[in-house]
Length: 219
Ligand SMILES: *Cc1c(COP(=O)(O)O)cnc(C)c1O
Image 1 (cartoon, protein in one colour):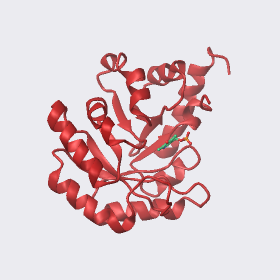
Image 2 (cartoon, rainbow, N blue to C red):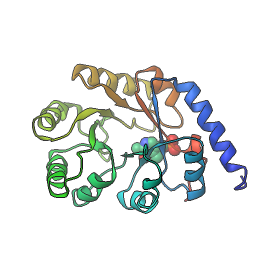
Image 3 (cartoon, helix red, strand yellow):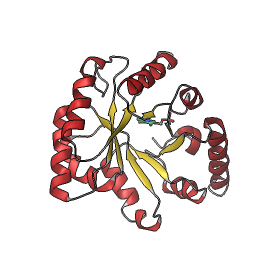
Image 4 (spheres, protein in one colour):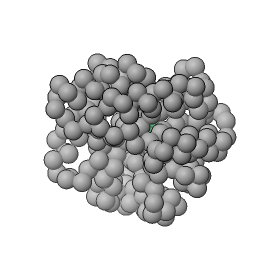
C-alpha cells in the first residue's frame, strides 16, 4: 500500500468495522508496532480510543500528540510490570490487564504518589487456563475483584480476555460475559481482528482491533 492511499483505506476499514460491531460497542484501535502515518490516518478518520501494549511505545507515540485531542482515550491492553505502574497511571485512562494483587498494590501506590486520576481498571481473565498467558485464573477471580473493589481509589469497570489462539473463541467470549454479569461488571473487552464481530454478538462492549484496521504490523 502506498502512503497516500493509506488514510483512505484506514477510514474505510474503520467504517466497516464500526458498522459490523454496532453502536453499543467501542472500537479500540490496537496500535502496537504501527507506523505513525497510520495512527495519524486513524485520528483523521475520527478514531479516538487507542489500545497500547507497551508503556514506553505509548509514551513515545502520545506524549506530544495527546494534547491535540481533548477526547483521546488511551488504554493499556498489554501486560504491565509493577515498576511501570507510575508511568502507566499518568498516561492511560484505562488499564485492561490487572491480573494480580501485587500489581493492584503497585497501581494504588502509583496513583497516590503521582496524584494522577485513577485509571478505570479491567481484570484480565485467563479463560483458557494457559500457563504462559497473563490473566487471573477463574478460580482466583472473585478474590481479585473483591480486593480491587475494597482498596482501589478508582473504578473496576470490567473484564478482558485473550482466548487461546488454537481454540474457537466463542466459548471464551461467552464465559467472560457470564463472569462479568455474575460480578455486576458492565464492561467486557474481547475480540480482535479475526473475531470482533463474533465478540460483539456475544456481549463485548469493547473490541480491540489492530491489523483489520491498520493493516499488517511492522516487524
Ligand atoms: C495486538 C493485540 C490486539 C489486536 O490484534 P489484531 O489481531 O491485530 O487485531 C488485541 N488485543 C491485544 C491484547 C493485543 O495485544
